[in-house]
Length: 417
Image (tube, rainbow, N blue to C red; front, side, top):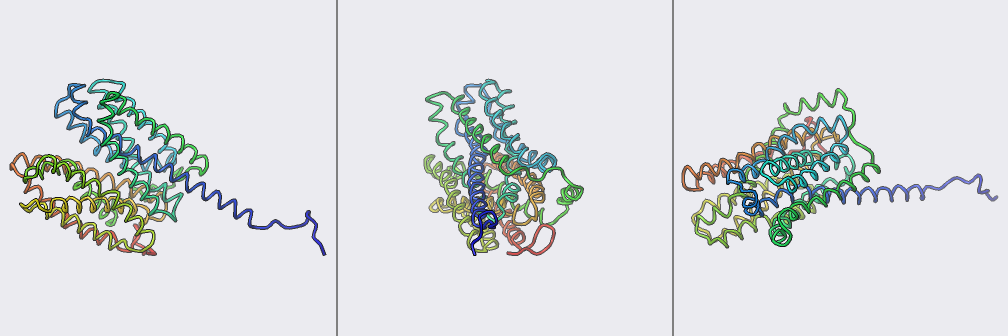
C-alpha cells in the first residue's frame, strides 16, 4: 500500500544536517571572532615597547613617562578584570565585549590623533582598560558557546595573542620608518573594526549569554573571594605573570650583566618569547586528547624553577636553555590558567566571576614584579637577590600547581576528569 506525500512523515536527516551546518557555522564564527579579539588584546600594547624611543623623541617624553606607559597596562588589566564580571552578568557577556572592542579601537585611534603626552596616556589607558575587560570575558564566552572545545578555543586565543604580539614587536619599527609612528600604531585599529563586525555577527547568530543576573549569581560573585581554590588559582597565575613581565622587561639586561654581548642577550629575549607558540600548540594538542592537567601544571611550574635556578649560575653557557625553559613554563601556565576558568566552573556566570577575580589579583601581583626587581637591582647593583626571590616564588608555584590541578570544581564538588 502506497503512502501519499501529504500523509508521509518527515525524516530526520535534513534536520540533523541543518543542526550540523549551524554547529559548524558557530564553530568557525567563534574561531574567527577569537582570533580577531586576540590580535587586539596584545599587539597594541607590545608595539609600544618596540617603538618607545621613537615616541619618546616625537613627544619629548621622559624615562619616567615611558615607564608609566609600560606599567599602566597591568593596573588597567586588574581594574577591568575586577569590574567586568558584574557588567557581563547585567548586560550580557557579548554586549559588554563588543562595547569594549569599540572602546579599544577608540583608544588606538585616540593616542595617534591627539599628539601629546596626555593624549597618548589617555589613549593607552582607554585601550588597556578595554583589554582588561576582554581578558576576563573571553573564558565565559568560550564556556557558554563551545563547552566541548574549551582546550582548542583557549589554545587558539592564547596562540594568536602570542603570535600577534611577536608580529607587532617585529614590524612596528620598520613600518614607522616608512609611514611614520602614527600610522604604524594606528593601523591596528583596522583589526578592531574587523573584530567589531565579526562579534556583532556572532552575537546575532548566538544571542547573548549571562544577561540579567539572579540573586544566586550575585551571591556567587561575592562568595568567590572566599573560596580557597579561587585564591590558589589567582596566586598560581599571579606568580607566573610576575615572572613573565619581569623576564620580558629585564632578561637581556640580566644576561648582559653576566657577560653576554648585547646581541646575544637580545637573542635570549627573543628565544624566551618564541617558546610561547610551541608551548601553546603542544598544550592544546595534549589537553584535547589526554587527561594531563596535573602533569602539565606541575611540569610547567618545575620548568620555571629550573630556568630561574639556571640564571643564578655565573656561567652563561646554557643561557639559551634557561631562557627556553622559562618561556615554555610561562606560556604553559598562562594558557592552563585560562582553561581553568572554564574547567573548574559549572556555568558561564561562574567562569566570568572566577576569571575576573583571578586576573585582578594576578595582574596586581604582576605589577610589582618589574618594579620590585628594578628597585632591588638599583639598591644592590646586582640581579642576584631579585633572582633568589623569584626562585622562592617559583618553588611555591609548584605546590600551587599541585593544588589547582586536583579534580575539584570551584564549589568543592568532584570534577569528571
